[in-house]
Amino acid sequence: MSECMNKEEFEVHLLVPISQEKPEEFKRELDRDPIMAKLKETVLLGWPDKISEVDPDLQEYWNFRDELCICDGHLLKGDRLITPSALRPEMSEEFEVHLLVPISQEKPEEFKRELDRDPIMAKLKETVLLGWPDKISEVDPDLQEYWNFRDELCICDGHLLKGDRLITPSALRPEMSVCQSA
Image 1 (cartoon, rainbow, N blue to C red):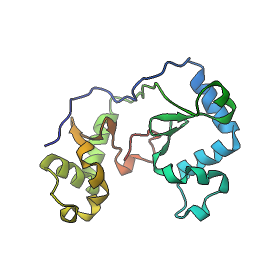
Image 2 (cartoon, rainbow, N blue to C red):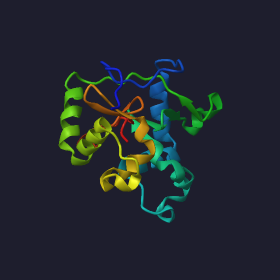
Image 3 (cartoon, rainbow, N blue to C red):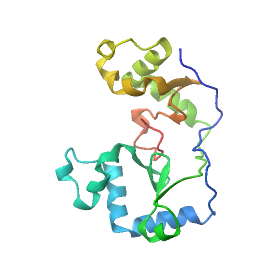
């Protein structure tokens, strides 16, 4: 059985101090930068099925499109903030961000409920609790996409996590602009 420590809040780890004004500046510049604005829109609306259908300006992002997300209006690659071109002379293109993601007291319980309502997530949670089969061929077809990182999955206070990231149930993904979904 995989377990991890019980956590009271969900957070993105703080690694680099930034001023209070810098996050808002990033949001403004992200929307002003035409390529970044297109990228942000594509991340929000979804990528085409083929690279040939992707806007040529965005094709360089194709290989890591699954790592891109929007978090509180910011464009991130994993846990790294993508820096709009106007701000790049000041810093590297990506850097680790210090953010505490505030959530309501009700949201953790809603995550648990939706996790159990989602049939695939419920199966995944059960598999994490009971243990994975020895071979991928023995894994439920709905869960095979999780096979390569099965050792990173754990249940924490009824939540399903990949490492220290909360997996967002599919029903909550449209409303969440948080990068902690798998």
